[in-house]
View (cartoon, rainbow, N blue to C red):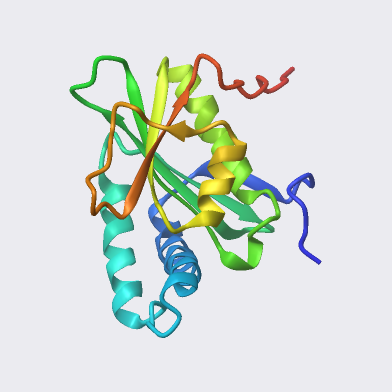
Amino acid sequence: MHPTTHDASVQVRAATRADLAAIAALHTGARAASHRARFPDTPFDVPAEHAREHEAWSRVLERDGTPALCAARHGTVVGAASYRHRDGHRRPAVTLHQLHVDPRHWGTGIGRALHTACLGAWHTAGFSRAVLDVRWYNHRARAFYDALGWRPDPERRPAPDATHLSLTLDLAVAAAPPAPCGR
């Protein structure tokens, strides 16, 4: 049985360099699990992929303007997300660049907790819309985003040979998470 995110053991916080190895490992595992459905005979969870994700997340964690969050349960990082401002657009927009959950924690609410934390930050920053790209064959991710209100982006039509579907979320409509209570 998977633990739920309704207990106090799940925390979403800013990711740090100390989280790098765990984030790279869970991203590699999540990517391998989602790709395996489409390409069952291709090895995705290999040292070269771990090194590639480690380098990519290292750049994210060192870059200003690309906030990164992680979700931890009992002190173990089980999910991560990063986003950045989209320049050159008519309306203030933010791009959800990454959102990954360790496959052993899929369906436990970790992804939703990360998404909720992102929404809170986006509302606070005054963004009016969010965008993301998802692989068209990743039906699990597409269903996740659909349930959260993401829709195909009419401003970003894919090329005929595109592997990704562009989605958008109107942040004026998306429910902002409740403000934390404090004393």
